[in-house]
Amino acid sequence: MSEEKFYFQTEAAELLQLMIGSVYSNKDIFLREIISNASDALDKRRIEILKNSELAENANPEIKIEINTDEKTLSVSDNGVGMSREDLINYLGTIAKSGTKEFLKAARSENKELNEDLIGKFGVGFYSVFMVAKKVEVVTRKIGTEKTFKFISDGTGEYTIEDFPTRNECGTTVTLFMRDAKDEEDSAAKNYLDEWTIKEIIHKYSDFISYPVIFKDETINSRKAIWQRSESEITEDEYNEFYKHLTNDFSEPLTHIKINAEGSTNFKGLLFVPSRAPFDLFMNPQSGGVSLYIKRVFIMNDFKSLIPDYLRFIRGVIDSEDLPLNISREILQDDPIIRVIKRSTQRKIFGELKKLLEKDREKYIKFWLEFGRIFKEGVIQDKEYSKKILEISLFRTTANDEWTTIGEYKSRMKPDQKGIFCLAGRDSATALKASPKLDSYNEKGYEVLLMTDPVDEVILSDLRFILPDSEDRLLNISDSDVSAQTDDEKKSAEEKIKSLENDFAPLKKTAMEVLAKKISDVKLSLSLTGSAASLTGGLSFQMQSLMRSAGHNVPNSPKTLELNAEHPVVKKLMSMAKDNSEKVSDILKILYDQAAILEGALPDDPADFAKRINDLVAIAIGE
Ligand code: ADP
Image 1: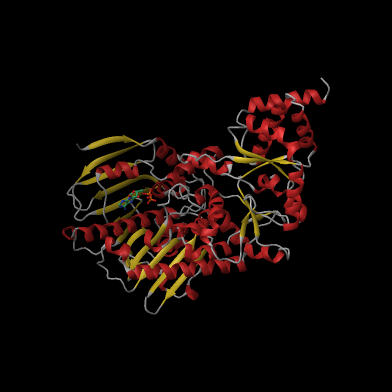
Image 2 (image 1 turned 90 degrees about the vertical axis):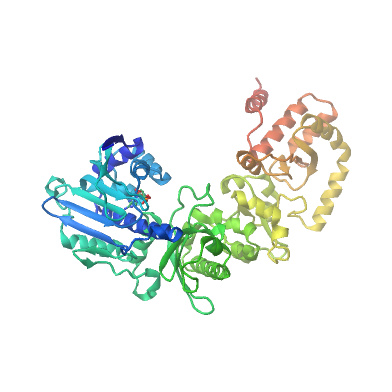
């Protein structure tokens, strides 16, 4: 088999087309992308050799850049892992990254040429070479194999792979056949065959690459691990470039956290809070993570044991001085040094987040909007930190339209308040604000925290267990034993309701028959003011649908229908029920559906609901 023709996967072909037509002004990044791939390939080679020492070759790992101005080619060679024929098809002929698919979706909807903003938002990797090259050849030999292959593509819909006389060592050479600068519409187009241009790009984007990047027999990059340098000498640009190299994220990080631990355990770290969540962060608890280095040597990516699951959005590098270089991955998981590093890293992250909240609220809100949901999972996962997490959590509130912390809530609390009132459920604060459960709190001027994330409900239901002796009592106003009323008020309400018992009995009987499948009880209440009915108790509808969509069986969770004893509709209903009116059951069904809608559920039978409302409207307008 000498030469075989392949077609790019549809998405890959589309992306290539976009690259060829690109007007993106920062084309320099193509070189960063290939150097970054070469550096990854050298990391992977190291790991292969660790697993199987027979694979070791004598050559020192390096990345070499060459230009040929006659042929108009620029090539980047590495002696990394290399690729097999299948790898070429799977990695270069196919788009595997979900982010790239999202990128294409966004580009399609823009329905125009790829603009700067889009390229800036997504990593597009290898394909970016077609912004500057009219043809690319990749010659590669995979570690531990004898055969060398050559991949050729001109960026149209197809590519070829052919056998190639063998390379002396494993690794990859990517050769770009550059487009003529004069072919470019853009007169400012750079000449990427120019020595100074190349050096400048390497300095700018690839300085911290830990392998030598050699051009014209000179090592161009300083190779100084950025996390080893002192904070005062690192520029914001350098942090940003390092972050992009590490994560493949094209946007700037929100903030960075530098760690310099000295004492019984010595390590350095450079961590980042990204400015946006990657596409799979919520679905995939395995995504993200921190890379582990030992004495500046890369050991592994995405090491989960370094950081708790609920901080998995944090990216970066931890470099230990104390661990032995030849330590096995299995041992690493349980190593006591790793545990110490984890604890102190966690402490540092919390300190920095707290500082951010205090010093730059706007940035903190950005962080919260992207990652708050995940961060709060920690309240349940990590008891030691539950309280600290709640302390720097942001919530919506009935008091205003801003975000608030529990501390700020406390400063506004009424003197007689016994705890922090909370209401969970629904997916937006605006929807939650319409809940009849808030009636009595609004009337009395009590502020209530509105908790709209799925995890909030779990937090509230487990709170007594999570924070058994916290002075910041979070009180779930959906709980039957939490109320806005004072003891005296409760007592007189109970007496009043008791006095209505006989009047209520016929209505109660009908309601229990008509709504038998939906409710476990029906009660009169004096804590509703505006609304006629409310549903309390049981799992919220939001939680039920979440559990259903996650494939769980939803436990039977019947609710109590509370009817407002002072509402004219309820008063009238009581007397209608006494007279055995047929309309009572219809109206009860409407009240139930209304209460369910206010809790964020749809009526079980929307058509039936609409019909009953129409019938009522007809009566109201005298039809
Ligand atoms: P990314 O690097 O973000 O995964 P790319 O499009 O840049 O995406 O590269 C796709 C894949 O091709 C890489 O993940 C890697 O498996 C493979 N690859 C690219 N360049 C090299 C190289 N120089 N050596 C070995 N494999 C490479």
